[in-house]
Image 1 (cartoon, rainbow, N blue to C red):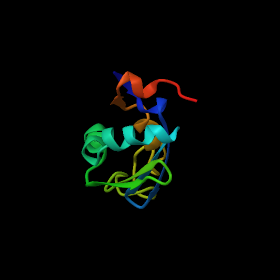
Image 2 (cartoon, rainbow, N blue to C red):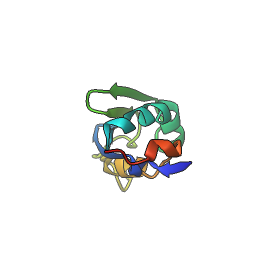
Image 3 (cartoon, rainbow, N blue to C red):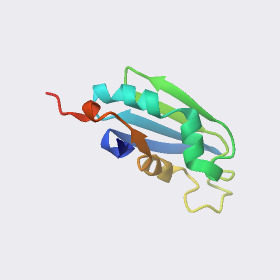
Image 4 (tube, one colour):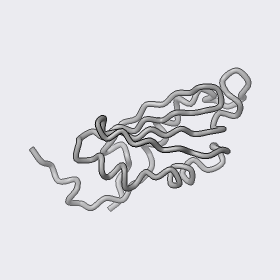
Length: 112
């Protein structure tokens, strides 16, 4: 079944120049493998489309239950020169949480 990423994770994002950084953190430890399986750099690149002109790098942080994505050429030059509404990359974290991910219904069963 497909669910919004926000059902199993939260996110934080920011910027440095023309780079956007997105951290996606699993709500529960057992949801981390879903993130690893479904959120590839290629999938994130496809999801953001023409907003990200450069490559996307993914870093796994299993001890935190998180993935970190670095989006190159994502801010139209950066906060001081961009005409984008969100030139600092803050909206990228909220936007990624709208992405739908494929999960097995059993992965979502509540456990104590």
